[in-house]
Image 1 (tube, rainbow, N blue to C red):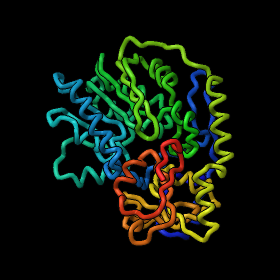
Image 2 (image 1 turned 135 degrees about the horizontal axis):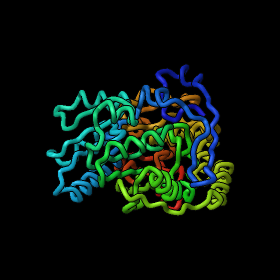
Image 3 (image 1 turned 60 degrees about the vertical axis):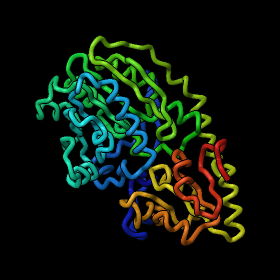
Image 4 (image 1 turned 90 degrees about the vertical axis):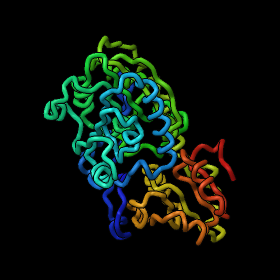
Length: 373
């Protein structure tokens, strides 16, 4: 696979993008699933093409999350730190009177903070770790620390968790949102396996790893974000060592995922797309996220004319190896394809409601039981 977060400036650059082996490993002790090939984070996020505020579904998610946090801590007015704040989509929605800080090394985080009309939070453009906590004199400073969809992208997890424990006051709380391994396996979501997702968490593996760092799990909920995610609340102090499921508990589900990947060309949506191509029709896709990069690179027999994306950072670029151009949504109206495959299938409803004038046929790459013709 090429890097799923890579978007190339020219088709020639795209067609010669590097390919990197991609293998999954499962920890035999706690069941944590991880990618064997550890790509340096500076390479992964040097030119980051992902701004959360350009995805309406994510904006709704963080509006709800900010409201929940505001309600829980309304009498505390906490000092709040977010790891991997991206363009500030959560921090900007938290109560104004809170002391807020984001830590994020990406170019998106820096440019978004500089462009903001009001600086509602402080930004530290660095990777979060124990050295940063000491350098910033944050030991015991923060009441609440959060991390949404960032723990998948970190290699040295132990250092990060130790940094969180160091930066939180005693009794402080750590909120994490991670993609749910159980949802991935249940939905056979092979399109979400890529180098940027260094780890895939189960509730057991997350509870076990943070328990070793001195955290007790207080509550959790499963949420629909990104096709299925976990939101877990931990408290520093009085750790709780929960027995974890052995890795063998996932063996049958991983085998099912493997079969789904191997039989991907037999998927009903793929059969329809092939029929369109055989008749001389055109197909396109919608949603140029990491999932799309995986899907198109593993479905080379499907010649997509182009792929729509709502993020200005991606429009005008090309997907690596396949060379598919990224275009704006206006193309659906001015030059409608016969069929459009929603590769960002976790935002299917939002995408269809935003494009009522598209006259072709919608298909989804996954989630067939809710497919709308």
